Image 1: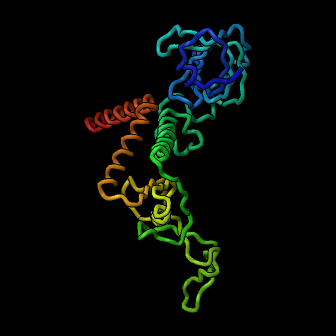
Image 2: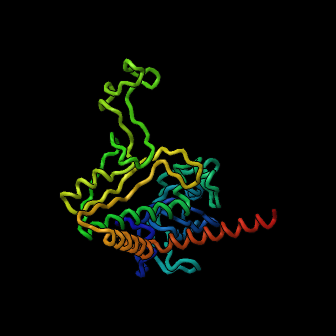
Length: 299
């Protein structure tokens, strides 16, 4: 029997069928109701256990964060909040989770706390929603350009170019930082470095894209770029992914039309395919704003 994802099962109308699923336990209530999630959707699927038919020692291992494999019957849900649920026939523990040490418990955690547990933070609703959105946005970017005749190109990440001074650069060197080879004037002799000259992490793929556009017509880059500016703002990113289309024979009006059409296409894609994630993040933001207002009123 092929294993299904939670998203697939929750979107099915057909019930009374045997299914198999693997995922991580979010909660286990009353020794009977397992909320299972596998990252395919922000929603959990409820798996109902008849505890009298299962070994007590096995059920004690069904803790938050445990990885489990369930087979059972997909039926119409008897409770509120979901259309279908799984009546469990077999349950296998694939990976135990110690409830005394597993940090991601079924409650709201601060971003500061999650930064200290980065390897597990995508188990939370907020980070899993963000990552599914990022994945959809990336796909939508490639989808748009592919459907509009653009050629995707990979520009160098390590480069000797400053891309028309697009930003302060991070240096890349294989020399001994404490004792580099020096020229007669005391400057660093980069001829003895790995590439034989000064190199940096890229701030833009613009220059390479421009040269390719002069032969391929329509190209775009979509990759990591790095800016070493010292910034005091909360929105500065030392590393980010940048989209740079370059088109031969295009005027300013065409450039504006391209940007507008691109944004509409990408946003329409995520609105259609990530509705639940967007709704969750919107609600979370509104709740945060309400909480901040209450705190300010108290102060």
